[in-house]
Amino acid sequence: MPGDDATDSTYQASDESPPPRRDAAALAATMRSEYELLVKVVSDFDGRLLTIKGWSVTLSLAALVLGFQHDHYALFGLAAVSALGFWTIDALTKVHQVRYYSRMRDLEVASFHLNRVDLPTGLTGFSSPRIDVSWSYKGDEPDWRGDPPWRLDPATVRRLVRRSWRMPHVVLPHVVAVVVGAVLFVLAVTGVGQLGDMQP
Image 1 (cartoon, rainbow, N blue to C red):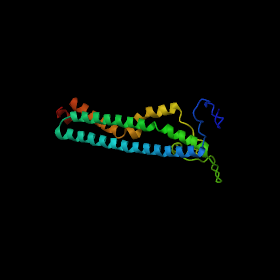
Image 2 (cartoon, rainbow, N blue to C red):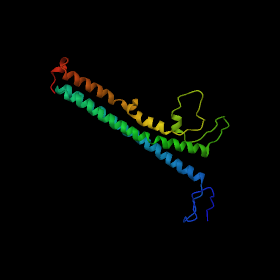
Image 3 (tube, one colour):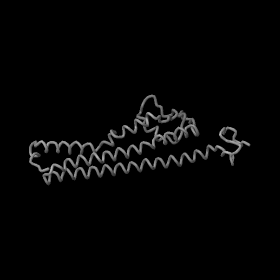
Image 4 (tube, rainbow, N blue to C red):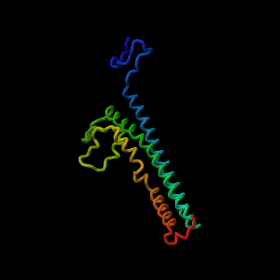
């Protein structure tokens, strides 16, 4: 015999127990906990990204300085290659971070439909949380911050993942060491100026 929840069409008489009742308050609490966890995970990724950048700058700069100190241009190439490696690690880490954004947005959309209110100040459709959707607001007119949040469609998620490699805050500072190291290496190999006197 079906359970009390007649809206659950998947329930069969042979099931051992009836489906659980839907509880909006319990769902909202669970979503809030998951959202807080996602914000922490995304923030932790930012710490890792700064560590990667720090190692990239330290090793690349050390290789460039040692190349000049010891007159070995191979160290310029090493600086460029190591910076390129850290750039790759930085971009891949950013890709992992970006993959959490769609879930954060889904929780914001669901939360909007569960708890939105119209405030007496004229602010309509107010809901919480809205960190992810509000981040993209740049002072545009008309002000869409009170509009219902929208899901990140698959094309947008794919674009964010692909763009991770060329986002300015991912590219820098690695690209500087890659370019400087590669240019110095090529100039030394081709014998330009005093760099041509350096050993491999």
